[in-house]
Image (tube, rainbow, N blue to C red; front, top):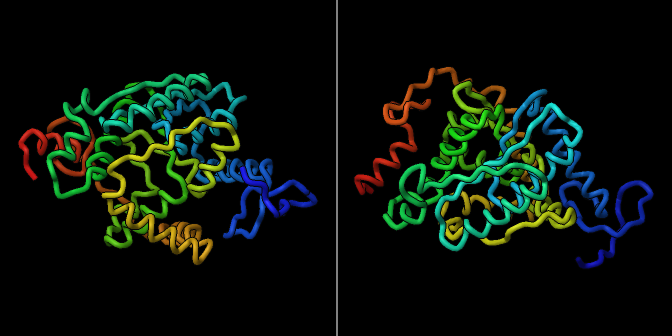
Length: 308
């Protein structure tokens, strides 16, 4: 790591800074940076009452920097809580040259932290891989299908494993991307669901939602967390990728944009209509759905029928 010309901004600390947070104006040394990230995670957990006594937390693991850091942080923060149990769930979507690499990393991290890892795959659960979906040439980007099917697998398996919460590694960047995507699409229903919980599904928690993506990556580096840096070959095909680039440009020119978007959404969310309609049961799989056939089963039928 390149030696910084700046000293840490915290108190009388004279350690060299490893990061300049442009949105806060602070230069932070390694110990104070670690402290800052962990403070943000603890604040989010307290603010949203994310973890309660007796919880069994299923951490959605990919083996990338975010999920690896999340599992590490949860184990570090709650190391003395004997009433909590942590397990991890990994999903192999079937992406050649990518997922097998990250899953090996997930297995190593889970083993090092003493957390049992349960692995599942699209192939076994649905009968096809994401590569096979992409090969069909559907109008939608592969990420659209991947997100629906991953959520289906994780929720189903979390229930089967007795989890009371599913922890996902969505960071600040992920959250504001989702918010902005729904703004652009005018999707008020999805905006209102971002912070809601339905009894039909295992509640999802996002302890990293207050931490910028770059800071999660740096935290993994300085904490010595093994991470995989390979990138999904489909990510650049998604609308989210376009929004991500746009937000990063705004953040570079106007530091604090991402936090401003998050705060604005949180204030606005108090006035959004609460989702009160009762969910149906999918006619195919029998699980909760907004329509008579859930999105995952729709995808299964499209793959079976070969419809674009």
